[in-house]
Image (cartoon, rainbow, N blue to C red; front, top):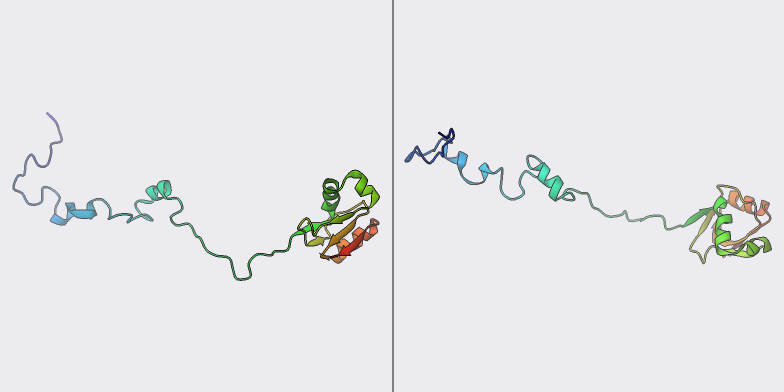
Length: 141
């Protein structure tokens, strides 16, 4: 004989059918809320699985925006010159135009051993000293 029978089999005519008060087995309280209710509480697993971006913060940048200045260090100039110019161009002392490459400023980190004539809009003092020490020059655009 089955140990669990339907509640409707017996108790015909009873008002509560074993649930206690009437409201305990009616409407959306039985299923944990309507729609997406409980997304941060008891239905959190569903939220993580099916809607991972639901509570993701999206916003806007501040009025000033990000720094639009593109920089390069002195230590990277030699490699860049090898790519843009050739080995002959570096030894010949050709001009390296950084403004055409979209670089606005040269910073002073690193070392340079090759004389380069660098055309750029702005340069730091330490970078200028290192470039001139190597035998190159700065051409401001």
